[in-house]
Amino acid sequence: MSNHIDESGGVLAPGESADAHPHRKLRGSLGVWGIVFVVVAAASPLGVIGGPVPLGIASGNGVGFPAIFIISTVIVLLFAVGFTALTPHVPNAGAFYSYIGKGLGKVTGFGFAFVALISYLALEIGVYGLLGQGAQALFASYGLPDIHWGVYALIALAVVSLLGHRNIDLSRNVLGVLLIGEVAIVLALDAVVAVTGGHEGLSTGFLNPSEIVSGAPGIALLFAFLSFIGFEATAVFRDEARDPLRTIPRATFLALILIGVFYTVSTWALITAWGDSQVVAQAADDPTGLLPGATEQYLGTAGLHIVQVLFVTSLFACILSFHNVVARYVFTLSNRNVFPASLGEAHRNHASPHLASGLDGIVVLVFIVGGILLGLDPVTQFYTWLAGISTVGIIILLIATSVAVLAFFAARRRAGDTSESPWRAFVAPGIGLIGLAGVFVLVLQNLPDLVGGSTPVAIGAVVLLVVVFALGAGIAAKRSQVTLE
Image (cartoon, rainbow, N blue to C red):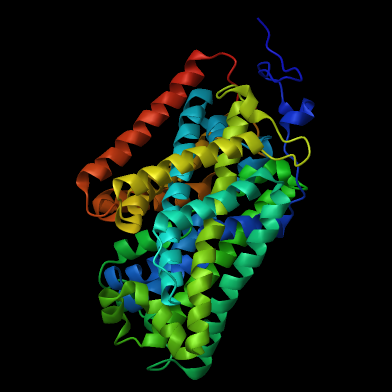
């Protein structure tokens, strides 16, 4: 029996593209910088400098930590070489699952589609806990009533849902403004520290091999790599890019280079601000105070207040970015006959995935309300538990995508197609895969610590990802109408 879509919404016929149905097609005018804004905002630069960086300094390799960011940047750039080489062969906005499906088959691809969806959704929900606590502390510092973190989280959810309902261009503009603000304040701190010479002179630890391998460089690599999560979402916005075949690769490399340089320089400046002899002890004693303390010392009280405000807006930008990613995963999977077809309808005026976005908002609402009623700590429980799921899931997705790239081009090579260079098809993604595998081992070894010291939660995170992979693969295997394109 053939399947079709009518104006009331139906399912796509096997192999039929959504392009033939405008009401099932997203539209936007995202250029290279528009996608860069969305992706870099998801990485939350200010949040990284204020969070994972102090932890990497304290628990990792101390003053050699900036060098670890350079290594991490190289690993993700090698991954991106293969990722972008496969982009011309993936004509839809399914991102990871489409890439994996191209190389490893439909069933495997849809298994990882569910892993991706759960991973991004978990991170989006978890960051609401960080935002809620950050906003609570911010307003309390100005003498305002101490309101429960959940109230701020619900307010943020309402704004995110409104923006998610509209065209992606509006989110791009909001993210652009917020991103410029948070990057500007950190760069101002970097510049002042570099000019004044810091507390003990400019740090040289990242140039010293003995410092780079000191302490626990493996833990340092873990925290550095986790700071890049979000960059891989460039391909999700394919349908809303002006020229996908050129825009997606350029945006991917540009975002990675900007993020890598920013993290490396800003980490070096933060170490210099405190001094090589003091920064490790300070980061261990008060990791959350490392950035605010340096900001107040070098930029004054006004700078401190700006950082406090922008830290909250940085988390909001992160949430908005991942909300857009989750909505587009649901939208695309609905047009691939996995979820109800109605969720694959684009808004007639905004050309946005408004129904998928609304469903995302409802799921987030349930979790926030649940966290409030259960009395969960917004950071040590609500955020860390969900972020642990996301961390494992996204690294698995990167590894699977690398394997898919190698498998795809190996098959083409066997068929006599040698048009793609060995560097892009095999060498770069192969080296990147080795690096990603190393990071994955570190994540598994330290997963209990990443989820608040709970081994049961760590085991539960892995089991959940296995279950959702099996669910997605099972649906693809049983439904003949499920298609990759």
